[in-house]
Length: 240
Image: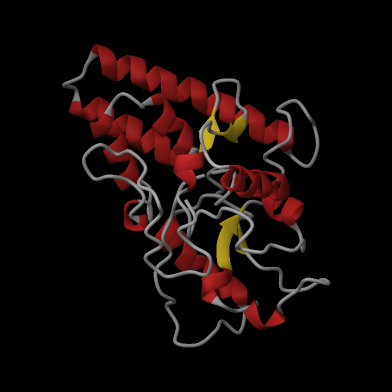
């Protein structure tokens, strides 16, 4: 998951209609699902981190900026109104999710080796809640579609890497690859493919809105910074 920073609320009070926050979220974070990372040009939802209804609902947070993320219909629907204790999950607006999640060439998403058991549990919890833990070929609640899209982006990113490797001084080619990355989404796949190219990784960090602002990447090496700075002071942030 791409670490992001929303910044302070654009309004002095809570949103009377939480859907009005969407335009500000897209301006600051880009039109991407905060969980599966796909670019969503329509049907992108304002996602409530803590649910606004159900047995665990916190209706007082329905219009609260700090409680918003962006999500596709699939991730939002899977998460639903289940309880989401921010101390028990890793979230891209307050934790350095780039440090803990591993994106594999087969399209699967997992947890990197070497983290503590507590961190692994927190990482697995958000994957389960959003359905990203599902086996790639499990055709449930959009899992197969999301897997297919990840596989397509892997191919596109690998082709871009090959082209740039053959023409390392071709600035136009790098710019084209960055535009392609923004058009497809899946920031983490692009970062994984370009793991050996700090310059390109830094360009990717700058290309995706709200990523550099998170403070989760070293400005020289582009490696994840831990613990996450959590610059907005969000509840239970900076866990890794």
